[in-house]
Image (tube, rainbow over all chains, first blue to last red; front, side, top):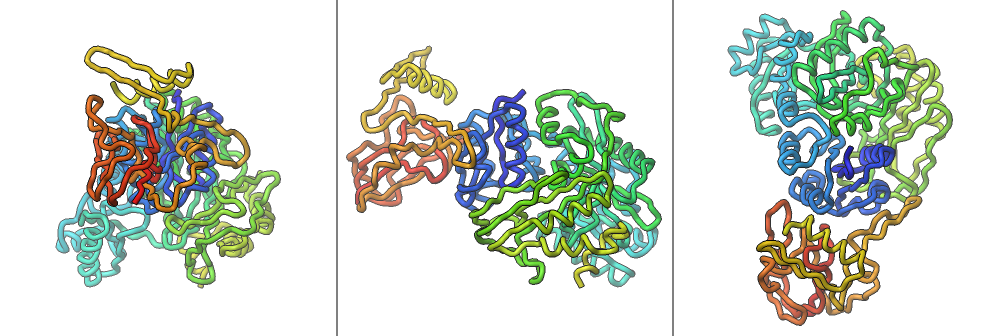
Length: 446
Length: 148
């Protein structure tokens, strides 16, 4: 097992990793920018080392600084968290060449699955259902028109190196296709440095269902059920739940086994998530694979009773998965709200500033993953998520009632937060009846 | 001799309260001396409720020394290992009392086997060197006090 792990991240996920390490008796080092000097992860880690100025380029994305810190502090492994360098194959490679274990998949897997159209090809060959579309990159408008004729409108043009909802354009007919195609290529080149685009049938208002996977270095795989992340604003998830209210045990098995097939084909090791789109006919299609631990991992932990971060560390240390698929049982229902320091009444404008008063909810079935505290000054340089409110009940209705209760108890003063928005969602009939899809938030906010 | 071995020697010195240690191994030779002006920075481990954990990179002694008004602090522009000289056999780049100019190389900060020269951007006289040779430093850590 590792002696010392460097946490190459900040905020709530850095704290999450430190906690798992503590429980495994592993020493922790956290790297931080000058803006995070007074953050909780810096205070709780066994050791902390300042690596640069606030801007992510100078700090959390600064590979030489992070590797230098790793060397000085004599660490055996690095946990990249999510975001920042978590899905950077170059960083994973450098860790390997410095003999420091990157807690995550291999650089090759990250690279393969980061290329969205190559990922799709791998999944298709493995027998995982994929969205009908181009087989690989679409070179020109002529090809685009041919493919659109084959799969039918509407179609979506996506950047091969995009993801997270960026670099996509929808076309409903031949004329808009030609202009959208050229624009999409130009945008992709500018945003991702690769102008490669591919095409797919556009699925209107799908549900977003993702499957949590674990794979070890010995060829063993597990699926830990799904999460429903359909409640999104501008492709950013706001609320997630496990299990999905509309997935039956048969669908769960089918999805899980398909996801494992895909992970195996990609030779994937460690924790990962395969995202599927569910259309109005209840057909599932592979969308993308996220080669990292995700923000919403806690809801899976609550219903399966498995600590995913500890499993990541164990897998990276070479251990075999300690569960068989039949050991994985989904208990009850869990819902997570991402509390952001944003003003929901002012176009979700981010609010940096001091948290002058703060009361976290508590009680049975409540978990808060946060790095903030009373007196904490939210720095303006990073994303606006300040806490994750996670509840767990025996049924989805019970989870919703706990959520209602905790949102009332949750007090944050000094900055605007999205708590009022969640209070409204939790009382909305469409949410309670699980009749939502990815278009829900847009309609709700009108 | 690499950083791991140097760290082991420093640890040995601390544990046995030595003021000086010299080691010759094959072609390598290292001599470590506990200076008069500074100490080998101890690494306090503070356990408890959300107070600062390990303040490895700021020693209490340094905080207590008040920086005089006409003295400028030169801080580490990056994280790395601090070396006073370009190689173990060479003379240090600068000594206390030395006059420096804009562009004078003050030290090396080593990161991932790359030696980065740290150059002064000011001129003046070095009144204090705040870290020991081969000590790890973090970004922003005070290295030199220079009197204008």
